[in-house]
Image (cartoon, rainbow, N blue to C red; front, side):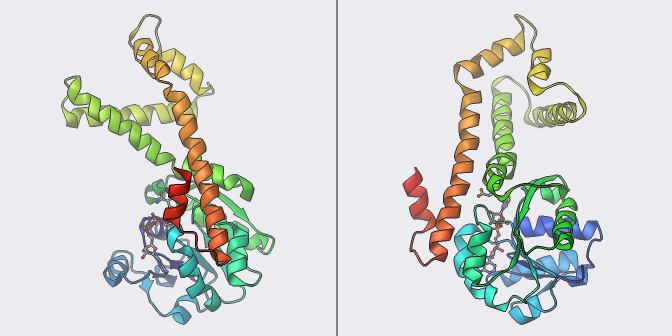
Length: 289
Ligand SMILES: NC(=O)C1=CN([C@@H]2O[C@H](COP(=O)(O)OP(=O)(O)OC[C@H]3O[C@@H](n4cnc5c(N)ncnc54)[C@H](O)[C@@H]3O)[C@@H](O)[C@H]2O)C=CC1
Ligand SMILES: O=C(O)[C@@H]1CCC=N1
């Protein structure tokens, strides 16, 4: 790829930039980035990665093979209205926005576009994202492979049907937050059970790494691995009984379903907003709560 342009310069954009550069997929001077107005943020990215930054849309998009959309969904409609008219005809559009359907992007552009919709997660920052990718019929085989390669620089990438992307968002897009939530609870318990916080953190991290590696390398299903930790009449059994009594597993399933539903709602809201409706993200959140 000769040139990649990124619209939005937040955490997801930075994670992708660092992965792409570390893997040498694109020369850093050919990666361009912009944001809404935070010049300081752009210049810090420029200094840190040696990439280019601009507010000039013609310069940003000139000869770009691909453009990554990486603003927040709430900024999508206004942001896209400003940039879509400047997109060169054959440029591949890659959106990482939660919920935003490929047809909504095409509708907002008012023309046919080659669009890849991707859902990575923040572990992209350390090359460990789990990314789902879908694309429309205007995307060539070469473009689809390029998009996959791009996300493979930041971890695992797999093609899915676009209809599955809300589920990917609810499961692995938001997934790191669920794990951090669990870790918060483990950390908070440490002081109550008499462990010093630094030691507790090391024990927690190693426990997570070990469990993740067991899941990755063992043929045994997660349920069996759990049973192997759980001695009859032992400590794990006593602890898990509390989780079962409080329906923690059912709550987690509910959590993932709700995140998936929110991705769908965001998609509908963005589609309506793109059509000129005045529904805001805040209104949507209120409606769904
Ligand atoms: N943070 C996460 O865990 C994940 C986020 N995503 C998606 O990535 C997108 C970005 O998320 P973050 O990086 O976390 O957000 P962020 O808030 O860190 O960054 C958003 C960036 O977009 C820029 N922006 C806003 N309006 C703009 C406009 N009109 N033109 C140009 N730039 C504009 C902002 O200045 C900011 O640099 C979201 O759509 C989110 O759904 C996807 C997967 C995981
Ligand atoms: O919370 C969100 O909406 C974004 C999408 C997936 C993770 N973070």
